[in-house]
Structures are given as structure tokens and as C-alpha cells.
Image (cartoon, rainbow, N blue to C red; front, side, top):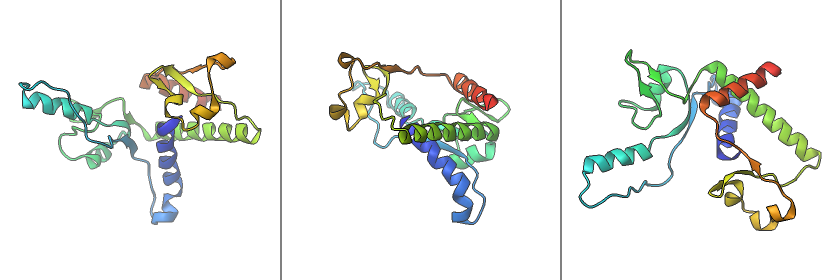
Length: 183
């Protein structure tokens, strides 16, 4: 599940236990992925500086989830919202796939809990099979795994790749909603 799952775990643990630590109710407002290094843009010598700046800002656009509340969006970035993945609507509100209602965040929290419980059940049952995800040669779990050499996961030994397709935000929410309806 990677970094996305880790960020959600931190968010939901903080929302559950934050009151004890901070002495006030803690409500999840969102998680945003921020580039950890400077963004380099390939450009020709004669390129317009404004065009280069626009390209750079586009690369600095964050991704993630934000509570669908205008006060929260405004608190996350003052002004133009050039780093948040939201658009200002004609009525002055906000729109974007990154926005999620408090109800949806609750359902996502339940989904994260279910995944963690299943992982715990598998580990305590002795299931430690290598089962890395695979989306292609440039996007798969083995590229980032510290144990790749020791694991020796591969097609030659009969291992099967676990293909994961990217879901559009609507599709992901649909699956989570179905899971919640099924209990």
C-alpha cells in the first residue's frame, strides 16, 4: 500500500487519539503529498520565463485528500491556491477530486482499519508470501523494496505478479462505499 496508506494511518490515528494528546477535539482535515526536493524543469534557453514558472508551479501542485470545507481549504493555503489541487468555482466555492466529505473520510478510515486488520490476521497466521503490486516495469513495488535481492520474487520461480490498476477517484470511492455497505 505504500506511502498513501501510511499518511492515512497517521491522519486517522491522530484524529482518534489527538484529543488526549492536545486537549481538544482533532478532526481530520486532509493529507497532502509535497515534493521533498526542488523541481527541475527542462527548458530551452529562449523560453519565456513566465512559461517556465507556470510549468514549475504545475509540478509543485500537491496531491492528496482535503476535507470538503471552504474554511479548511482556505486555512491550508491563503490566496490563489496554486499548490492545492482545487479549482475555484463560479460561485466562489471549491471543486476537485481531492475534496472529500467528513462522511467519506469516515468510510475511508473504516477501510484503512479493515486493511490493517486483514494484514494483522495474515501475519499472525504465518502468511508472509511475497505479493508485490505491479503496474508496469517502471511502477512496481520491487523497485522500492530493500529486500528485493533476498526475496528473489520473479516469474521464473512461478511467482505471479499482482496487477493493480489505477482507479479514478470516483471508482475508488465507489469501491469503498460498497465495502461499507457490505459491512
